[in-house]
Image (tube, rainbow, N blue to C red):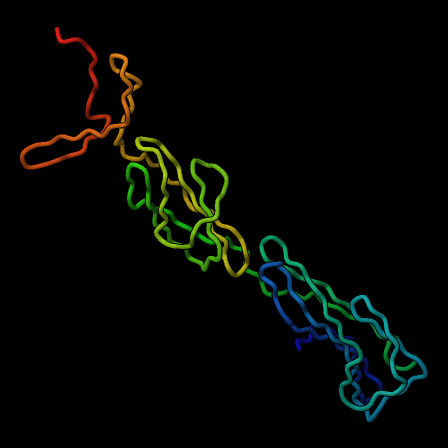
Length: 247
């Protein structure tokens, strides 16, 4: 354990001390907290030390002491403390202790314990378009973290759970239509979400609908240019429907 505070006493040629130590037991990245163990001990430099009554404290607990302690160091109290970190993953805690006896040892000490930082960074996610078709779109993504959940949203709508597969494919889109798409991922280690950039895209035009021509309903149709050597599908922007008579 790491010593962080002590109060010492000299009696004749002998040295006595009340010593505080701590150690990190665990860190919970998901809940942004640490558990530490603090310990108080008495050091005796002589063969033994005795008093008629004595008490001590550590952090928020007071306790009684034995009447006699022998040469060396004896642990007199141990506590486990949960410490919550701030939004940046930083945390510190002040822990104090005191001892009060009828002989030699009376005083207090304490110190600030600074805990290792917990990672609170969101994952970095980059989204890029791969293929845009009439009724579907495919995207690639990359990230600097291990993700355990992935969500996407179309046109800035609500987030929907999607497969972790890469690339991502959107289906059932409307041709010749403007869309935006964005994803977000949850970092496995700390469960923090990170958003990707937003991609704007337009599906390829392929079909058109006319209400009627000369009273006859027109259904969806696809337009092609057929030549001797080639068959090419064209988009709406490449043709125009002209209504008129034969004159």
